[in-house]
Length: 474
Image (cartoon, rainbow, N blue to C red):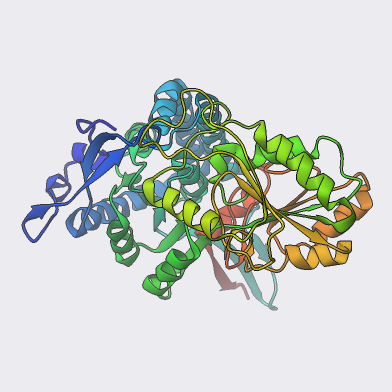
C-alpha cells in the first residue's frame, strides 16, 4: 500500500477526519510487510478516537438520506459500485495480492466474487419479502415493517480483505444502513480503494473506513455504532460481545472443519480435498481441516491424501501465510503435535524467499484425538487424519470440537452422505465437494464459530429490525 494513497476520510469536509490522531504526543503508525518476502512495503497512520468518532458521526448523518432512498435507487447505486469494482478489477487484485500474497488467479477470482455480491444485494434490496399485514385483532389492522438499524461497525480479517468486507457491507447497505469498516492491520489496501468507489457510487460517507490495529477495532466497537459485524477469532469475538453490550452483534469466529470420508468415497476425493485445503494457503475458516475415515480404510486414506497434498506447491498453487504472528502460531501447533506420520510437500521455485511466510502443504496422521493440530484451528495448508471404527464414531469425532462452521462427507452412497451431512454440527455441509459457495446460499456458524448469517437474502434481516404498527379501524 502506498503511503501516498489517502483513506476515504481525507477527501471529506469534516475537519476532525483530517486530524492525525495522537497518543502521548506521538503518531501511531502500522508498518506493512509483504508476506511473500517479509520486506517492508509501506506504512499508514492508524485511526484513533478522533477519527473514529468523526467517521461514525459522518456515517450517521449519511444514514438519514441513504435509508430514505427507495429500494430501486439503492439498488441502482449498489449496482454502480459493482461496476466500478469490475472496471478496476486489476487494481483491486494487485492490492489484494500486496497484502495477502495470493496467487494472481485467486485474487482475480475473489474480486469478481466481490462485484457479484454487490450486484446480488442490489437485486435483493428490491425483492425481499413484503411487510406482513392483516387483521390479527378484531377492529384493527397491523403491519410489520423491516427497518435498518443505523450505522453498522464492520471489523474484517486479513485472509479475505475485500471479500469478507463485501459479505458484511453489501447486505447491510442493501438493508438501508451505512457502514464504518475497519480492515485488518496487515491488509488495508483494497478497502481504501473500495471506500473511494463507494463514495462515488453510493454517496458521501455511506461507507467509511478506519484503518488501524486491534485497538482501532476495539474503539470502533465501543463507539456510537448501532450494530457490530465481526469476523475473527473466538477470543476476539468474546471481547467484541462484551464491549458491544446490548447492541446487536453478528459473529463469524472461525472453524475447524471435519471431513468424513467413507470407504466408498469417489476417486477424486483426495485431489479435491488437497485443493480445498491449500486454497488461500489454508487460511479460510471453512477449509477442510480434519479428515476422519474408517479404520479399514485408514492406511489407504493417509497414503492417497499424502500423495495429493505433495502435489500442491506453495508458490505455484497457493501463497504464503499472511504475517509473522500467524506463521509462528502455525509452527507452534505443528511443533507440538504428537503425530507419528508426517507427509510434507515442497516449495515451488521462486517461493520461500528469505523472510517470507511460506509453509508447504502437510498431512499429520497417527495422532491422538486431543492433539493440538486436531482441536485448534490451524489456519494453514495442513490436514490431520483420524480413524474411527464406524460411521457413527466418525460422526462423534467430527462433532467433538467446539467449532461448528463447515463440514463435508465423501461417499458414493448419496443417501448415506445426506444423512451424515444432516447430522453434522455445522452451519454449512457439503457432500462430495467442499468450499462450494454462492451468493444465493446462507453461511453461518454455531457454537464457538459464532452466530449470524452471511450471504443469501436471509442476511438482510441480520441488519434490520421489525417494527409492528397497529391501527384501530373501527
